[in-house]
Image (cartoon, rainbow, N blue to C red; front, side, top):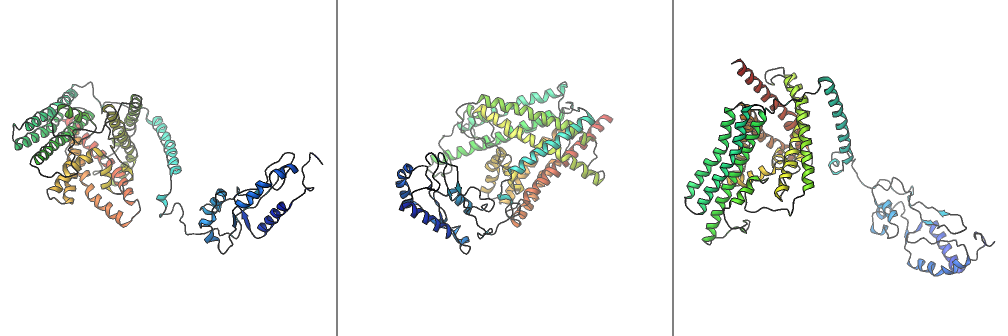
Amino acid sequence: MSGKPLYIERNFDSLEILIIIKRIVETCFFWEKTEEVIPLSFSSPMEISDQRQTIATAINHSTVRRRPTATSAGRLYNSPESTDSSGEDLVKDFGSDDSMDTVDSAVAYSQPPQKHETETSSLEFPYRPSVPAHRRVKESPLSSDSIFRQSHAGLFNLCIVVLVAVNSRLIIENLMKYGLLIKSGFWFSSSSWSDWPLFMCCLSLVVFPFTAFIVEKLAQWKSIPESVVVLLHIIITSASVLYPVLVILRCDSAFLSGVTLMLFSCVVWLKLVSYAHTNYDMRQLTKSIEKGEPVPNTVNMDYPYSVRFKSLAYFMVAPTLCYQLSYPRTPYIRKGWVFRQLVKLIVFTGVMGFIIEQYINPIVQNSQHPFKGDLLYAIERVLKLSVPNLYVWLCMFYCFFHLWLNILAELLQFGDREFYKDWWNAKTVEDYWRMWNMPVHKWMIRHLYFPCLRHGIPKAVALLIAFLVSALFHELCIAVPCHIFKLWAFGGIMFQVPLVLITHYLQDKFRNSMVGNMIFWFIFSILGQPMCVLLYYHDLMNRKSKLDQS
C-alpha cells in the first residue's frame, strides 16, 4: 500500500491513543479546544515520528474551555474567561451584539491537506440552540433614543442622489418650458455710468484707515489727549459708513453694486472700531505696567504696544475683523490649492446666478405682495421660493465663508481659518448666530458683548444690544441699495430674539433632540428668507413704477 494514504492501517502509539480518547471525551461533554489545531492523520510513519514532540507540546500549552450551558450562557459569554488568544473570530461571534446572525467561520478542528490524501475536516459550530439569542434591552436604530447615535452616511448619500435626480429633472423641465432666462440687467449695469461713483467711493475707503493710523500715531506720541482720540475715532468710523450711504442714495445704480459697496463699508467700519478699541486697551495696559499694577494672566503682552502702518495694512486685507499686532501664519502659499479653490468659486458663483435668474426671478415676478394678496397664494409662493432660495443661500455661504475667505487667507498666509463652525447642527437660534459667521461673532464678543458686561450691563441686555447692532447693519446693506426703508431686514433680525428664547425652552424641555434645529431651519430658511425676498422685491417694483410714472 505504498504511495497511498494510510486511513485504516496505522500503528498508533500510546500518546496518539491518549489524544484520541481526550478528544472523544471533549466532544461528548461539550469541551472545546480553542488554541491549536492538531492533525490526526499523517501520510507516512516518518511524519508521525517527526511530529510527536510537536503534539506533546501542543497538549501541554493548549487552552481548554468548557462550552457554557443554557443556565450560565448569559453570564459566561460576557465574562473575560470566554475569550482566548487563538479563537479571536469565535470570541467575536459570542461577545458581539451581532453574533446571532451567522456563524460560518468557527471550526473546532480542521485537518490540513496532505500530499496524496483527500481534504477532510470535522466541523463543529459553537452556536447551539440552547444559547440565548436575546441578552439585553436594545433600541431600534431609528428609535428616538438612539437615532442620533447611529451613522447615517448611507441615508445622506441617498439624499444626495435623490436631490441630484430631482433637481436635474426640474432644470430640464424649466429649460424646456421657459428657455434660458439668464440676463444681467438687474444685477450688473456696467454700461451705465451711474455705477462709477460707487466704484470710486469703494476705492476712496482707504482714506479712513490711513486717517485712523495718523490719530493712533499721535496718541502714541501723546500729542493729543485721550478724549480727543476717542472723538476722532468716532468721527472717522461714522464717516466710513455714512459716506457710502450718501453716494448710493444719490446714484441710481444696480442693486448688486450697491450691496457690494455697503458690505465693504461695513467691513471697514468693523475693522476700524476694532483697531481703535484694541489700541486704546493696549495703551491702558501699558500705563498700568508702568505704574507697577498687576496685569491679568489672560492678557498677552508678548508684543509691546506700538503703532505700525504695516500691521494696519495687513489687518485691513486679512480675513478677520479683530485687530492684533501679530497673527498665526502659515509657512508658504499653496498655489495649486489656490487655483482649485478659484475654479470652485467661479463654478458655484455661476450656479448661484443661474438659480437666481432661472428660478427665483420668475417666481417673484409671478407673485403678489405677501401682505396684500390672498393668504393661501402667498403661502404657496413662499414655499415655492424657499427651495431655490435655500440653494442660493447655501451657495453664497460656501462661496464666501469657505472659498473666498480661505483663498484670501492662503494668499496672506493667515493661519486661523475657523471662519465658521458646524452651524447646521445648531439646536438653538443663539447657537446658529454663534457659529455661522465666526469673524463677526469674535468681533461682537470682543468689542461689544464683554465690554457691556464689564460695565455692569446684564447678559440679556448685552445680547439684545448685539442683535440690535446686527439688525442695523443688515438693514443698511439691503435697504440702502434698494432705496427702501421699510425695516424688513431689521425686523427679521430682531425677531431672532424671541426665537432664541423659544428654541432654548424647547431644547430644555426635549433634551437630546433636534427640535430646536428643525425650528431654526423652518423659520430661518423655509419661511423667513423667502418672505423677505418677496417683500423687498415688491417694494422695489412699486418704487420703480412710481418713478416711471413721475
